Image (tube, rainbow, N blue to C red; front, top):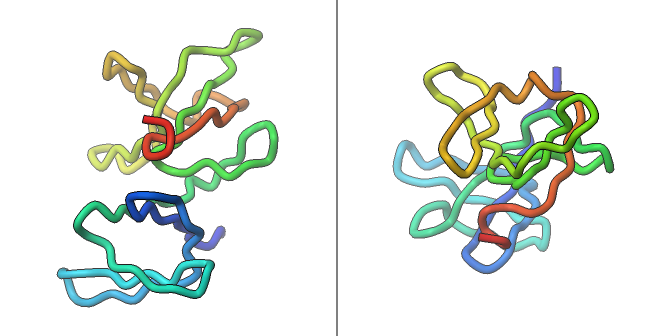
Length: 117
């Protein structure tokens, strides 16, 4: 079983998360890789690792823009998202159409929704 991994958007930059501290339902304190702390809320966003890597070995997180290989052709750009109704990660295209992420085996990360909106 894989461990949970997160990254953190603070409004300016994405940081690797090295620790989380929960304060009931009201807040989360995040220990960032630079040794500083931030609090989730007011524009701060946690993104969870999907457990998948792209063809270059980069970890795929919620909010990543990716291309997926369909046979021999790279598909359009998708956003990686969590589908809470089906409890799984999905790929969502620009029209809002959704596909199961596990229908593909090859991915390329080309950005994310925070640094490349």
